[in-house]
Amino acid sequence: MGIQMLCPGTTAIHTASSHWTYEGAHGQAHWLDTYPDCGWKAQSPINIQTEAVHYDPSLPPVEPEGYRSPGSEALTLKNNGHTVQMSLPQTMRLHGLPRVYSAVQLHFHWGSTRHTGGSEHRVDGQVFPAELHIVHFNSEKYANLSEAKHHADGLAVLGIFLEVGNVENPAYSHIFDHLEDIEHAEQEIVLSPFNVRDLLPAHLGHYFRYNGSLTTPPCYQSVLWTVFHQAVPISAAQLEKLQKSLYATEADKSPSLPLMDNFRMPQDLNRRLVLSSFPAGPSGYSAGKVVAILFGVLLGCLSLFFAGWIVAKRIREKSIMDQKGVVFKSSSPRPTAD
View 1 (tube, rainbow, N blue to C red):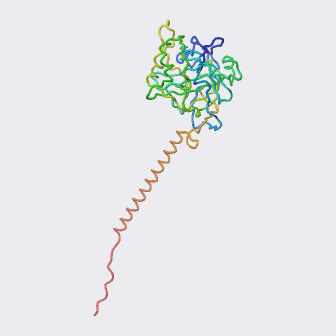
View 2: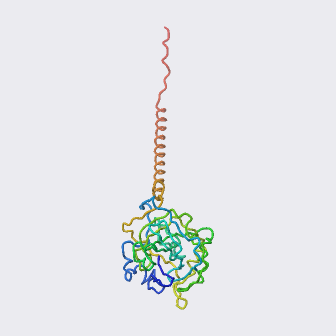
View 3: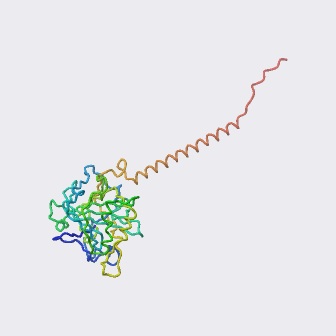
């Protein structure tokens, strides 16, 4: 998750001219050289291991306010050279968290046709084709993003997995249908307001939560992450637009470099606590553990069946052998009279 403010009077966390990339000499393996926070112990994203998460039944559903009607403020869609980003009005807020958080922007992370993955977070090692991040700042304590980003309780980000479904998702068409208009870095257009709530999963009560960081430089550890368990479907054609429409370079720069594979690899958890608002599986078991248990029960039943069949076979064989060894004798003849 990277942040670049588009509103006047605010400071960008990174810009398209920031000299970092995902691969190569300035790739994520070298971010630490310029951005020391990227090497700290509470970095994001992570691989969420469901068997290790702690179920917290007190976690309430996320309650978005103003998402369905963002108001009359125009939404700016921009290619910033690292991702496609859309500004959001601060009238959009999040409740159900420790504080009230106001929206700033949303952006995407995705892969390419050469990779099956693209999401930043993983669940039990599973990757998704893309991931949406919706960024908010703690508006109860801080005046804006520029102030909030330096504090541990400053930011809250929603993470939404995207998966390929059978039909086009009309909510995402509001964004993806305009990607060709911002093909190159620093290009932007203005969109009419639309229902942003439809970008989220239908059910907002099932999620994972942990304390982490921005997933791009400068990697500030100021993010309360909420990663939804339910993925949102988009069509294969929509995913292809995201993967193939954009360039990381400006229009007057040559060669044009495709904007793709803009995801950070999972970071060490380092003993951080990951909470879930729902049981990871039946009776609190993870899905993987449930499968393992069922497989073990099935294997045990098959073993018992096979052992019983062997015992029954031996009993039958012994019975047949016993019958072959029996000598039948007639009753003793009665003595004849002299």
